[in-house]
Image (cartoon, rainbow over all chains, first blue to last red):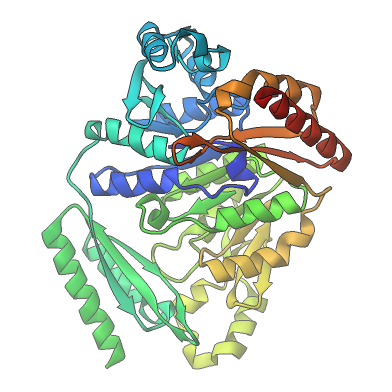
Length: 233
Length: 233
C-alpha cells in the first residue's frame, strides 16, 4: 500500500487508511507486504508506485485525488504506467447530472480525469471516482471516502482468512524468548509474535499467534500456554 | 523512517512511533521524506534499509530489537552495513550490573549485540540500547522506550523550525482550487495543503500552510483568507 500526503509526514494528520487496509486484508486472508508513506512529490510517487506494483500482487494507494494543486496522484499513476491522463466520459456525464452543467468547474473536471485504460472505482460517499488500472487501486485520502471505495474493491481480494489469538504474559520476554523460538520452529504455519508491555512496575505483554490454519493455531496456543506455565511453576 | 513489525501490517497494532517522529521532526525543521512499514523479514528489512540510507540524510528505525525470535532488526542492520554483530562490552557490563550475573540469560545477552562500529543509544526507559551506525538510528518498537530513545538522538537533528497555520474553509474544494493553485505558485516557500471534510451535509475543510519563513507564512495566510473572502462575497 502507498499513502500519499505531506500532512502525514509533517505530523499534522495521523494515518488511518493504512490501518484500515491492514485490518481488512488480515480478515480476508491477504498479507499486506509493505506500507509506504510518501510526500506529494511527483518523482517520488511515480518511483514508489512502480517499485510496489512490480514487487507485489496488488497495490492500494490513498490520497491526492482531489481538485487542488497538491492532488497529483492521478497524473503520477498515468506517468508510472506510461499512459495519458484523459477525461473519463462516463464519469464526466455522472458529474454533469450531479452538479448541473454550470457547476462543473475546472476543479471538478480535474476529478473526472483517469489514466487511459483505468476503470473508475465508484462509491456512495463521493461522485469523484477512484481508479483501477493494472494491479493498482487508486483511492481517496479522506477517510470516509477511502473506506467506502475500499468496500467497493474488497471483493477482489480474498483468501483463507487469518485468525488471531492472544495470550497475556506476566513474565519478561527474556525469560521465555528461547522457549518461544523453539515453538515458532515447531509451528511453521503459525506466526508467533511477542509484544512486551508494562502494568505499572511489572511486565505484562502479549504473545500473539495468527494463522490461516485453525487447528494448528489451537495447538500452538496450547503449547505456548503450557510453556509459560512451566516457566512460572 | 522505517517501521519494522508484522503487528502493524496485520492491523493488530496501530502505528504511533512514526507519527511521533513526524511531529518532532516538523518542530525541529527537518523534513521526513518517507515512512516505510515492513514485515519481520530479513531480506525486506535489509533492502529497505539500504534504499533509505542511500536516499536520505538519516534513517530512524523502530521495532525488532527485543530478545525474541521475531526481533531481527540488529542482525539485519549489520548485514546491510556488511559488518558482524558483536556483543558490546560496555552494554554487557551495564546489563551485568543491572540484572546481576545470574539473570543475564541468552535472551538478554542478545540485546547486548550491536553491529560492529555502532554506538549504543541509551535511554531512561530500558537497559537494552538502540544503536547508531552511519546515518542510521535503530530504536525500539515499544512506544515509551521508542519515545525515550528518540529524545536521546533528537539534538542531532535540527534546522529552522517549521511553523504551521490552519484556516477553516466552508466551501467545497473545487470552488477555490484554481485560486489556491495560483497562490501556491506565488508563495513558493510556503507549503499549502487543502484537506476537505464535512460538518454534517456541509463542506468544512482546512487549508494548511507551513513554512520555515514566518513572514512569508503570514503573508500567504492573509492572501488565502482574502481569496476565500472574495469567493464568499
